[in-house]
Image 1 (spheres, rainbow, N blue to C red):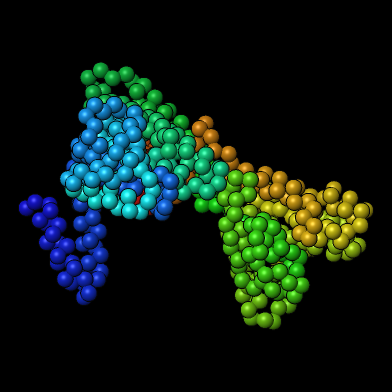
Image 2: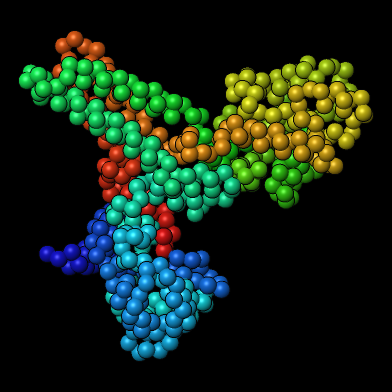
Length: 508
């Protein structure tokens, strides 16, 4: 039975029974989408690849074997030069009515993004023009693309691997400079080259070991071939361990540095949040306990993405059940944060009669976070002394020599020092993306790399047994290869592909 006939029958059945069999409907629909996406590789597709809404110029992308026909019939152009922009009137292929006048580009496969023949129409970005252009393309049996279908075709045609696909998606979503740098490196194949080199080491090791198993008795294989393979595998294990112990830098940079602002009531936590996000997001009053729940906001600090949270003031002897819950949530958020900003009152510190270190030690103890800060280390928290505008000169000199950052949310004094301290912390947490030291940017990658490492550990465990079967042990290396292959797409399933491509926008 032809696929399209099967599709019609399945789709018809689901639309008739979706009310009473909702769960089954979803499952069958997803299965149909997978098959349909695979079948559509022989279909020419089109989509608006530029932003939606009115704009000066819009780009409509076409990919597939009908691309050249569309360009010729809609522009009356016969002599096409690859990758050369031509200014042409674009016509309806049947009525010959002029739709618009714009630039036309021809990208013959395999030297195109998708690896297929491709065309781009750069037209004026009016809704009526785009609607009419898409209707004209439909007359040539060119159909709207699904989300991520252009990139999916590039993957199927070996133009990109899955790490590059994910890097491209992150590049589109990047909101800060360092997110852009990391995504661009990944889209350019930095992770692909690293993981592919590791996969080649595994493949060579397997080939040598299996050759030894099959031909060692015929004396055609050198006696040290297994030892050399083991040496290469041990070096690979070291590289994998180093790669995995990166403090999740790439993942944090991709999702944002979770930053908690904590301290006693009325020390200026909400004011600090408003300054960092540059808007009045949190209510600021002289009344203690104004903030009772966590307020999370996204911001960009020195090119790093930051998810910053204002929390309830932590104090002892609370009777209000709402404040008790707010304090519990504040401490819980701080425990799971990547960076903790502790805000204290500089005026209280200066007039307490105690030296800075003694005051801070007692302050952290009263907040109940002294153990937490010791655990995460000095590079994961900052002590801020707010209300510096209330201090005398001698008190300012004392605090300026301390480890804290002295600021005033009222006058904004000390914010340059604060910005520098935050940048240093973010650089330590996220690093600076580079081609020399690529980092893991996806939890999916980390999961497969961890499993790959476990299989290599298991291989050497089996080899340590004097009675081990070399053929059985070698299967662990095969499993390690499959885990690396799942990262780049050498070994994959429709489920993995759908998870990655479903997040793409139409036209990409």
